Each structure stands twice: as C-alpha cells, then as structure tokens.
Length: 266
Image (tube, helix red, strand yellow):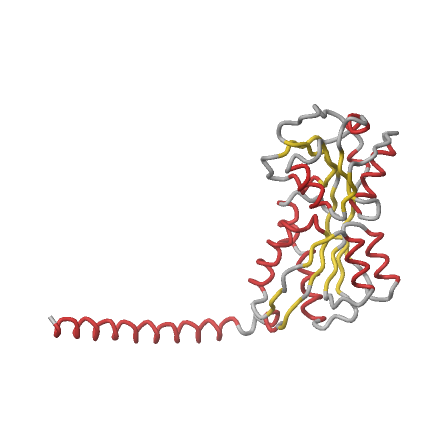
C-alpha cells in the first residue's frame, strides 16, 4: 500500500507540474496579447473617495467595476456622509482624491476654496416619503406630515436632502416641525426602519429594494431635483487614478450602475 501511495503522489506531482506549466504559458500569452491595449491598467496606487451618503449602494458597485477595469488601483473604504460635512472636512484639509456631492451648492464650496475645477454632473435624485411597513400614522400625502401628532424625521437643512425637503414642503405651503434633524439621509431611513418615527423624507434611491418601509411619491417631487456633481481634487496624491474614476462614473458602464440603483440621468 505504501508503494501505491507513492505512485499516486508521483502522479499528482506530475499533474501539478503540468498545471503550473500551463498557467505559465497562459499568463505569458495573455500578457503579450493585452499589453498593447492595457495602457489604462498602468494606473496604480490607492484612491480615497468621499461621497454623499445616498450614493452608498451605487458606489459600492462602482468600486468593484472600477477595480476590475484598473486592477493596479486600490480604493480605500469610501467615506459616506452628508455632503455639507464632507465639504467642510475637505476644505479643512482631509486628504481626499475624489468628492461626489448630492448637490451643487456643497461642491461649489470646494470649488470656491480653490480645491476643485470642472466638476461633472453625473446623476439626479428626487424625494419620497418613507413610513414603517405598518404605516402606524396612516400617512398618504405630504400634507399628512404637517399633523403635529405625526413624528417626522428630516435631514438637517444644510444637508442636500434637508435643503430639498425644505423646498418640497415650502412649495406645498406646509410647515413641518421634525422630531429630529439628521446629518445624513441614512440616519433618517434608519429611524423610520426602526419604527422610531412615523415618516421621513429620503431620496427615491434610498428606498429601492427595501421591504421594511413603504414608499409614497409626494405631489411636487418631480419639481425638486437634486443634481449630483463629482470632481477630482486639484491636490490629489493620485491625480491619474482620480481622473479615471471620474471618467468611469460618466462612462456608459458607470451610468448603467447609477440607473440600476434608481438615479436619474444628469
């Protein structure tokens, strides 16, 4: 039986050698054929991105697709937060290569600080009302949010989703006193999902695919559109990769991922 084992091992060893040899040939051939077309893939290093909280699901997919196209680049875990918070951090010197904002005002602050030139608009978004699945307060319209008995959470006014919410309510002539004002759209959604509030206003894209909240599209939502700009920072430590990421977002592949996540075209 010892001899049989030895023979089996020898046979295995032979197989291993063959596989390694084949792998060697394959990679050599692949490299030879693709090197001329792979100029893009000479990008390397890390990339640090700050993005509006509402971009989380879409950008997590964008990162996978971008790294597949540019295997030499590693994207650090993205910092997601309210655009106003991110703009402040960038102006105060946070080492960011790419900034994606949920509105033009917060991007403009970074432009005015001389840190960005030529932002590119890449998506749009509108607001929806979200309520817990059981809809305890029986919310049906935007006007229902003005009922003092209803607990409503909104984004803070300086955050893009908050500024849009204020415009939507003002357009409808409604005065809503929120139970809490949150620093980003994710926090609003979390409170509604947990049943800590009767209703909240979030972006259309935030409610895509959620089974534990109901979504109501309010009248006038189509008149309050947030446009999302993206830009590479002028002092980026990896300007080539930063420019490639911005270009990828604007490409057909990037735009398809944004559309699948529920965003409108810029």
